[in-house]
Image 1 (cartoon, rainbow, N blue to C red):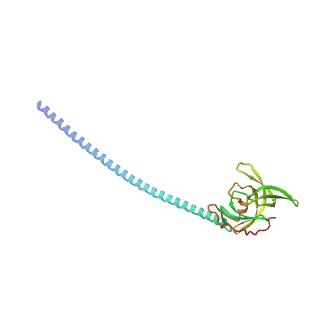
Image 2 (image 1 turned 120 degrees about the vertical axis):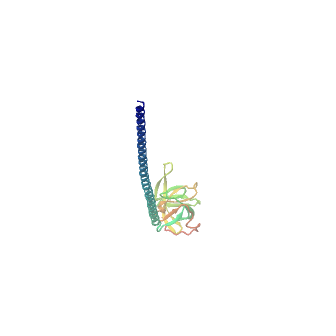
Length: 240
């Protein structure tokens, strides 16, 4: 009886060892399969990462190329605009005289001549000259105006019209307008001038757009481009 029990116990123990060995083998197989799957997954992920990195580098090269192309196009646009502007400037300067912000002028009043510094003012519609003691009178049925110049010389000229000049205060200043002869460098013209006391200003003569237009281009950074103070040698048709 005891012998049978021992034999039965031995069989159970031997079976348990066999089952444990089989379980260990199955566990090892599963671990090996899992490791292989992890290795395969890692390999696929490495391939995908390499492909994505390659694609990213290609996109970066394409972006850089597009940025460079945009810069080149912008440079071409700027160059074309500059060329157009230069062309327009050359066209505007064609047959025009470049003058500085201030030039020497010779003024002919008919009975009197004077030399004075003139300021170029592209913002003024009509040229202006300093005059004091302005009064109107009639001569041969026409309206004339008598006034005193900056050099205290009194002259009389036919009145052309009145001009309403808008001041900085938005108020309009009614002024007398006469025609005078003026010479700037080699340019000799007869033009309208308003009469205004400019004794509180730096320049007795102001040259506006009615003289500058189609004749002169102002370089505000320069002065006396047309030369030094001239001698009185003006020769223009009579102003009246």
